[in-house]
Image (cartoon, rainbow, N blue to C red; front, side, top):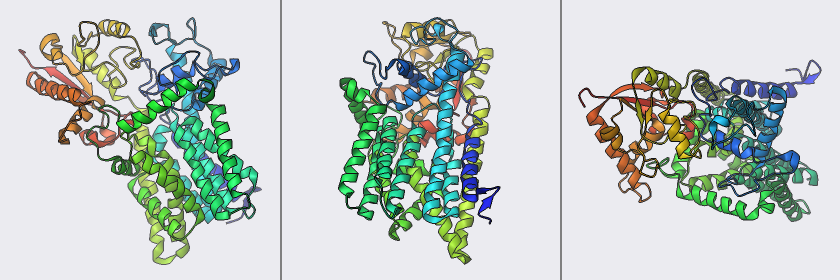
Length: 569
């Protein structure tokens, strides 16, 4: 192969091509779940909240946190919220601002929200994620190109480019993919520190800065510094301890610059930060009830999110490189092992929590493929296996992409229900899990109950829902079946799968027992007085068998069940 092509080095062409390939994979389906003629708010449960929080930041006025305490504002660092606000302002400048009075956005009165404008701003945030996702593939390419050559670099980059869960989440207006990109850059710089004949302060400080950027997006990014510490320990520069301390200081300064509330709004910051740590350790209500230990569940998430072949080869390659005393592998393991222990001990087990581990798996996979290629002969079966794994993951990613480009099951179910019944009952407060039975069906739970109930009553057909005397909603209430008696009752896999998983639990924890018992009682009563009518969605993830998959991998294709009242009841 010639070293240059058209006056540009082949390496640069490979890097640019890989980045473009990864980006182009992420663009189809990027409009999934946004406003259409049936619903207004995004079907992603975090996007409306992220957008609402971003409107409380006004960088041009020097306002980087809310003027008054807002619950859970600091669940993450605020860098992504700031970038989303800037992207939204740019979007308003070039595509037009809100066409309603005020800020164009209001949960207390959704009718005073310009949903077309909100959707455009959400799309801007999704492009940030798509660019960051493609950028992470490019960074993994650069890491392995430096340490083991072109084959290793391309292989590592391809794993990130086609990983199904990473591609899916690169189309979401959320923090995880951007935080992983900054983390990858920090680890890349740590590898550079380890390989430089003369360790420079500049690289060390930049490594700390990107760890701070990652932490300013999602707190766990600070663990990237562990890789730098290993690199400094291997190179043993004269001022290694001083360099390590300087990198920590740099990361903290960058973190405070990107999340200034940590210093200027410290009481609220620490309240939200400690809540988030406790919440992660304690659980997420019913969402992960009945799932295995986090160590096992997150291992399964890795095979689901990357692909079984790629995950196994990546892990094997990383461990083998570590045994062979490759410094880059020690750097990756210095981050991956503590990080895996942290998410393994947690009771909140979203698949997106595994994204930082993809960096180590990608590098291990690149090493495994390149080592097989170098040895030649029968060892080259590893190259074929790697190609097979990339193909399988790309095929699954393509299937998910086609699904995200098509009609969402919540829309399809709503169209059917609107023509098949005079009224319909829902088993829990409407949210992202609900069919689009009225325009604001996917709005967050922050919307006041009187507003929400008024919208349901005015829907066509009317949406029936059981409430307490003071107007608060109740879930899985048999009064819906025996009292309100709607023609149809609908619920989704987001609501039912957690109830189904608890059937394997010997002892129900006290905090979920009432919800589980209510759900089981409701289903038993439903089966006696209603019959299953229609099911929509679930094809991408194995239908009913998907009950063990994490909720955030099922966002784009839930199952929506519709039950019809039996004649004469």
